[in-house]
Image 1 (cartoon, rainbow, N blue to C red):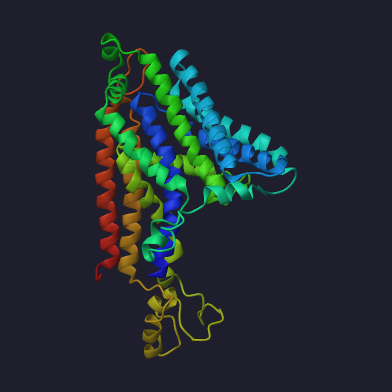
Image 2: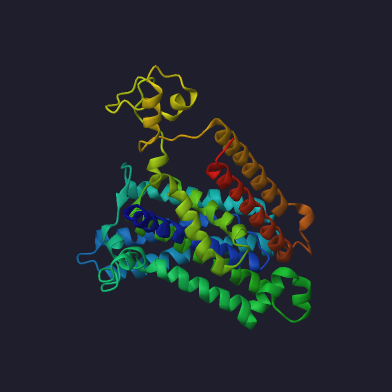
Length: 398
């Protein structure tokens, strides 16, 4: 039970980071724009939020936590929206290629953040903003300590975790239940018809892209000042999380509510390896010349039978914790399923980026309904492949 609680505690903050990035990209894509600069925008938001709180803590005689929070949020959102504005100007006004511009924005965001980050680091490998971290990670006073296991798993996080869930619900309502959302979806699916209906297509595209960039920037801010304990280091981790956020958009079929469980699922899968100790390879084996006080065998030498020990000792080693034992047939099926999963993922990516599935109108972007259908196909395919992997591991084998 303790391992399960620790797993959830790690997965939810990780999922929150990519949830913000995914909601930002969904907002952008609903307007018909594909912004592949989300990783760079998250980088800009994380650095701007950290820099503002860091200099405030350093130069203020009596820094306040709530001021750190406000400064960081304003700086992160402003810097991220500036990145979104640059993308909008290049792709909407100048009609530049969206894929190339987005990738360039990713490189630009990382470069700007790391360039100015050098002056903050001042030769050190990392630096920290402890007051900002304490403010962003502050838990709910009563609920975080009085409800037992619920407090540990549900109310043990900073306020941005709950803000992400609220934003996802609000975004779902706005996109599906309001006139603004209807106009935005009309702009994304058929800008020509929307323009004929009197909708200002350019305004909706600019606003959706900039607001989406602001949401993504909050994800970068959360990573630096909460998830990473207020430490800034030029490791490039935010960029990797940004690409996960883009992948989450397809996985959740462009639905904000699906981002909630999808992001947490990604987080649990990311931290899964930490909590599978009973399936890890035994570190001690006589045949591998590793010190082992129990005299047990690793999974490889147990399966191949290359042991001078008796059959009884080899069988007793199979029941010891830390020994990963699978018959050869199961390992073959496991790798076969892994290859199938890789091929299915590659097929899904090609399907969602297939130029024949895009409807171009006067330089505008693709029709989202087609991509949504492709996303459903990818999701079903991955589910089937995952089932085959599970069956290959749980089946009795041949």
